[in-house]
Length: 254
Image (tube, rainbow, N blue to C red):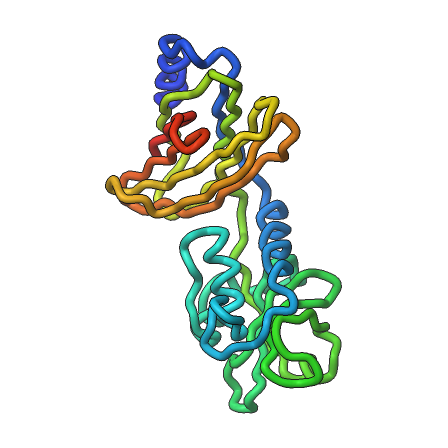
């Protein structure tokens, strides 16, 4: 028997609270990740341009990229535009959602501006000059950007493991070891419940007994799955899900 299946079998047989609680592992598609990045970027529309800032008072162009990806994967991309241009995967065909697009706005031949592609030849970025400043949406077909376009890089290239935790009132999972996960591979954690009333849920990412990731949400029977995305490293990680600030719902060891 597959080692993970065997461990999960033991948990299911000997934990008295697992009748309606399940945990399983799937591959969530690239498109899901791309749409989430675009959605996150759009939440910052209208924010002011502030050189060197990543969101405390505003953004510069690479600061916006840094913030959006950091909020989602907890492992930030390079902070500087030129470093971003050297990272990721070179795109040889058409652009897709969440690709990073680069421009030479100084005339020196190097990438000095970056944005996040959102489809239909449009990108979202933190503009430092022009009629509109701050986080805006522009088009790659505009003469200014068309003349200065240097290409794009892709950071989202494959599906990711998805951990789904379904929590029923009073019935919680204890622990499992997902063998499919590996250091450096992004992970989705999706939590749903059958709570009849809205209940506060907290997700903790713990490494070496120290809290590294924290997210709080409100769940109910009608709630859509809430997803957390992060990248585990070579250290031992645990994901703890807690109900009402005190009651442990799930403990997953990666």
